Each structure stands twice: as C-alpha cells, then as structure tokens.
Amino acid sequence: MAVAVTTLNGALNDSANRLTLAAYTAPSGRAKPLLRIDDEICLITDNSASPTLQVVRGYMGTSAVAHQTLAGVTYGNPTDFPVTSKGPTFDTPSVFTPTIFSNVQVITASGATGAVATPVTIPAPAFLNVTGATGVGINFGVPSVGEAYIVKNKTTGTFQIYSIGATINGTTGSTAVDVTVTGNKGLYIFCATAGAWETVLGT
Image 1 (cartoon, rainbow, N blue to C red):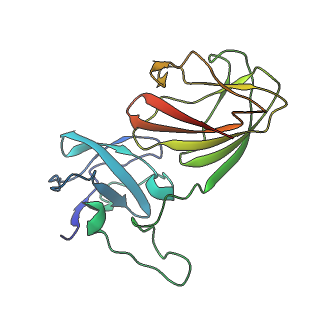
Image 2: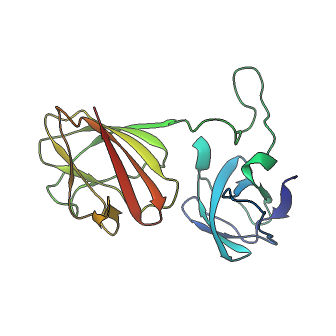
C-alpha cells in the first residue's frame, strides 16, 4: 500500500511528543506505523485521540526539529515507504536502514543520587561515554517507546544510572543500576513500554 498524505495541523517544536494532523486513518497491520514530516521520521505509539497522535520523535537516526503548521506529512506501515539511495549514502532516511547510533556524547557523571545526577539530554538513539568519579551518576528522563542508548563506562570506577519518574527493570528509577569498570563495563538501555527502561548489561 502507498503512504497516506496529509498536513500538520499546528506548529510543532523540537521536543513535543504529541502532534495533530489534518486527517489520520490508522494503517492496517501489526507493525507500528511511521510518520514523516520533512526529513524527520516519527514512530506512532498511540492514535487513540486521532488525529492527535503520540509519537517518538527523531526515529531511526533522524533528528527531532521544529516544523511549521501545514508542513507536509506522510504516514503508513514501514513497508509502505520506498527506499531511496544515492551511492553509499541515503538521499532521505530510509525506514529499511538499520538503526544507527549517530548521536555520540561524552557525559560527566555527577551527584550520588538521581535527584542530582547529570541529566542525559542528547536525543536517542545515542552512544554515551560516561566519565566522572566513582559512585556518581547520570539520570535518564522518562522514556517514550523506542528510545535506546548504548552506555560505556569510561569513569575511574563504578557509576550509577537513575531515571527519576520512571522505572528501570521494573524498579523505581531512584534505585541505581551500577555500571562498573570491571565486569559490567557498559549497557544497552531501551524503552519497550512507555515510562519504563530495560537494561542489558555487557562488557
């Protein structure tokens, strides 16, 4: 099936995760539909208030940016979108391209509790190299479905991961997850359920 075409009903800033379209008809199928505004791809996570949609911004390696009212919008199932390429690079973000952790940041941990830990503000997906003193932490915000980070411990010792207002592995995010210099030296943290982080520890 072809993608549907509509427009944005109201301007959208770069951090909003709800948007309203001029019209929306949910595509059939099991896959969560995708939406494209200009060069940004969004994952549609809730259409119960259609044509107002809950979305994950900056999906599949694109950037969340502001959009003007009446901006052109296309939406549909992932398989509805064409692949457009030019040599080894993509003319436009392809929904068939594997997720690329294109955002990279060195972040300095601080504070021994989640309330004063360094907030993670770089958009997901991203790769984070964490530095800082032993026992201090970083605080991930309340996640939307689809957000994911790879986190590497580059500190002098163990650092802590928090998420105030969310859960991590089913436990309140004010309880730290340890990432150590030896053993669990990194992790993959992702969101499959809104407001809940899951982690996979690695080496």
